[in-house]
Length: 188
Image (tube, rainbow, N blue to C red):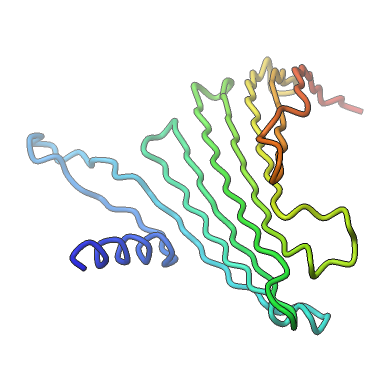
């Protein structure tokens, strides 16, 4: 029982929307220079209003947290939970988690990593289509390097891959891409 309250407090802390910045001062410094405390943004979205009548029982809960522990680092985490109930029972449940990290080395150079996982649990007996899997999982990675050569020219180098799995097969890589792109703004 004594462990349940801290867990509930932590969950509520993460789900309650807030945005805050603090100005603290270094007590060892006589000039009172401010210490930087990370800024955290969090939103919660509950959506169950769509036009079709069967969507009235749908529930979508989405939370996003953005943390900036310093002026160069940006962390974004998000999770979406979705369910749809129909007359005979739960049609599906979907979970989607996303994690994004951006590190800005300078005005010209940054790197970014995105990791995203999705899991779908379906009640196949309620679907008319026979191709529905009871459980489907996907995982996506993307890593990007960006270098601004001059104000009109940007170079991107990156890597991306996708994984897929279901109730029988574990997550397996379905594709992998290495890419390079150069963008230039033409003056006309």
